[in-house]
Length: 232
Figure (cartoon, helix red, strand yellow):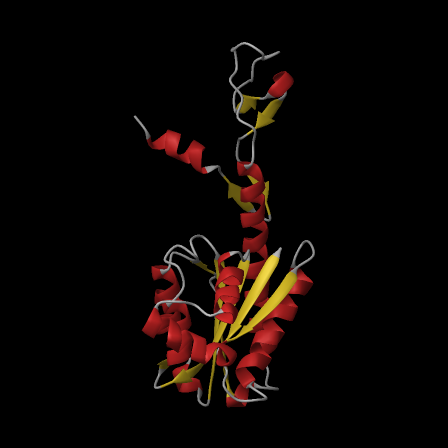
């Protein structure tokens, strides 16, 4: 599975990057299989993002980051809080993504700030943004104020959010595997057999199941089956 971490921290070292690293490490621990982690540091892309707005073309580093995000099985996004919302650099990066890049991608939202008073930035800014981008935002967001580092509660929130993202990544991976089926034509010449209910006959009459599968506590139903159920 491919996990991409987008960090919008500006300083070095950065509390935003520190939170991103803790979240990604927790996802790796909780994932059912191996996880390939890639970190996208937005401060390194600031100039190319600005050029993308002015000339319409993405530089090589920005294009590689966009490709990584679009191909991710799961996404962790972490921004510092500026003026009670996400940073302009953070928003600009997602403004220059392709419109459909995050369709159905599980996303864990997180933010850092100097005061706990800004914790609602997760709900009034980040969650609506990624809902608009048609991503699947996990229920638990993680906000870390200055006083949270080393205090009780942060580690538990990190683990809970990471567990949710790991489960969603596993479910999406299972859905992708279920959707890959060789379509056969039962009853036509060349078929050695017929498929039963919920199966598709392939070469040699081997039936391939396309019914719902259970994975990580989620019921995965192929899109074609759901669409057929809606038709009169």
